Image (cartoon, rainbow over all chains, first blue to last red; front, side):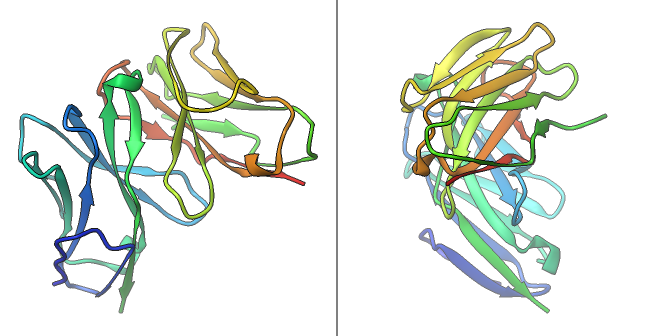
Length: 113
Length: 113
């Protein structure tokens, strides 16, 4: 599967591969993080979240990893499917702005059959 | 249960006009946040309301205002529209006011001509 250490704006994978999407967050004081999936013309869809007292959390086919030392977040998607094609955003809670979500740069995931 | 609902879905306005966007949160959710998403970028925080009080405000001009009603629905108002206000306006609801899952509506696509 694809694995990247730095944020890339686009990621192309084959159906069935594992995908890894990376995100660098900005505020070392942020303590809550969410991954969203956004399909064209739709609002962001909640995928999975993680709090800063954890370094890993698993959902259905997805895993989020948090590395607070380097302020890095990753989303792993197992057995990627064409329906996973979308833009993926990580978001952090910034308590300095009244619990506003601060979104990172999105990654466009393209899955080919 | 219905998710977050926004109205209208699409809107075309002329420069200088005023617009009101509406959002109904998920039943039981007491917090509503508004975000602006311009094409190709992640959502940018505008306002958060919790229990009818403003909890946070992003870096937007005073032309932008919002309020939350006793039933927790919310309106976003934008006065003196500029071409640059053209964007997808997203509403997110969450149960609590701090660090809880936020779910987005489909958004209102505003075009200013």
